[in-house]
Image 1 (cartoon, rainbow, N blue to C red):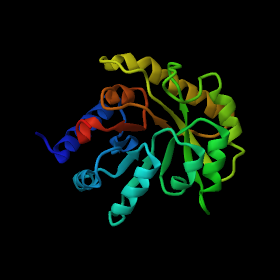
Image 2 (image 1 turned 45 degrees about the vertical axis):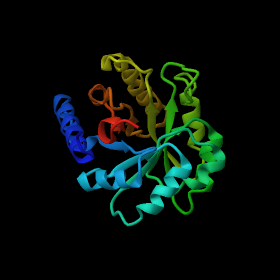
Image 3 (image 1 turned 180 degrees about the vertical axis):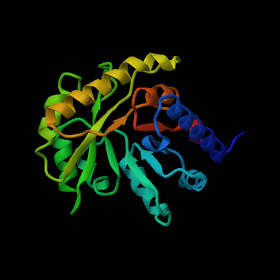
Length: 226
């Protein structure tokens, strides 16, 4: 069996190669190692191999791991799951980026709980209108973006999406292209840059990078099956 360190090195090499094919610098793409349900020891092993950004889906698990790994220097936490407003206090001010904001009420709670700082956030877009996933539609995302501009202590940095599952990575391409185009339209509308596109996971991250992703969320390819 391969180790976390070996899997991390393989992912890092594939991301770098995908960037080269797309004419992009590897520094333009952040690998978010999705550590949800994996142990703090696994995170520590990935960090020792070179991973710096880790994604969690559950607020309580994030709090526990942050506590266990408080001695690790230079790592950044991302909250990538659906977040209930009543748990915003467990996340706001403690993560580099909240990837899945889909309402003004959630953003407002994050802003209230951000302390003296500003919490960066992304709007999550339900790419295919799936009932099992949260997120706003392409049609409603611009209105939400305008509303978020008025929420204190949060900063909209871009968009996130998760295409329908498929065995064919190329099946994700239309959804990634559509998200990039939506981001560009919203940025023009707001008159400010939205530099972040969080899209691409273990099965399709190379396609996502070709389509402009800045943050790929990779769990299984780094940590193995849950």
